[in-house]
Structures are given as structure tokens and as C-alpha cells.
Image (cartoon, rainbow, N blue to C red; front, side):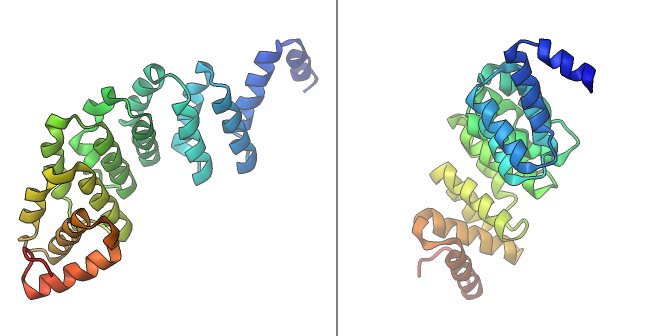
Length: 230
């Protein structure tokens, strides 16, 4: 311990602050970690990028994870994006999900080729939801239709939060999704039909609310008038 203190005392102040921040990122107290991430994001330093990304994969606290993403957006995208893209191949679901979330916040379209069909259809709902959000932000205009087809093929998936995320992603693509929604309205699976109808309603009336749209979709599906208004 005395030796460690002696080393710290002889280090330049900048290096001492760096060491303190790095330790703070691994502290057992989430408040300490949050303050450390805030400090790193306030004074961006390329030396922290690897550690920030490493923490994204294992950080248990939602607010700290969100701050980690913010801190990464404060650094140069030319340095962060390639490293985040590498994380998309991680076996750890949280690493993939948080990297996708961060890429969506950075908004650098050079990351688009890394948003693969495998990620968009990932078995983990959190990864898939993050991929949908990132894809809508990063997709080039000429590839929107292909993306809409991939997303529409997952209508009916999961519970409320997952379905709402998918609806929002589809709506974010605009009118290009309409043919795929209309096709899904004829699906034999009632969950797919209801989700497609609800998404189309929200596209037409964003203020309707997801719960109302789902209830309306159930009524329409029962009446067999999926293609009609009212």
C-alpha cells in the first residue's frame, strides 16, 4: 500500500486523475461509478474508450449504462465506432445491446453494414430492440424497403414492450412499411395480424396510443375488416 501511494505521489496530476477515474468505473457503489463516467464524459480522453466499452458489457445499473453511452458519444466517432462494431460480435447479449444503443446515439452511418439480419432477429429481445432502433437511425434511404421487410417479418414477437419497440421502428421508416403491414394483416397468426393492424393505426394516428391501437386491432381482427377504417 505504501509503495502504491509513493508511486501515485510521483505521477503527473493528469495520470493520477486518469487512474482515479479508471478505479471509479469499477467501484462497487453505483453512485461512484456514475460520477466517474460523468467525469470521463466531461473531459473526453481516448485512453478511456476501451474501458468505457468494456464496462458497457457488464454494468448492472441502467443509469450508469446510459451515462456510459453518453460518455462514448463525447469521443470521436472515428475512434469509437470501429470498437463498438467489434462488440456486436460478442457472445454477451448486454455487450451487443449496449453497443447497438450507443451506435444509434452516435448516428454515424458508417456503422450501417454491421447491423446484420442476425442482429435484427437476435433471439434476445433487448438486443433485437436495440438493433431495430439503430437500424432506423442508420439505414440508407435506398435500403429502407429491405429493412422494413425484415422488421415486418417479426410482427407479433414478444410482449408489450418488444411489440411497441418494433412498431416504433416500423413507423420510423414511414410509408415504405405500408405494403408489408398490409401483407401481415392477412397472416394466419392472430398475434401477427393484431400487431400489424395496431402498427398501421399508429402510423396513421401517432397520438392514438399503443394500448388503444392494440384494442382496436383486436376488434378489427374479430370483425374481419383489417383493411377498413372505423
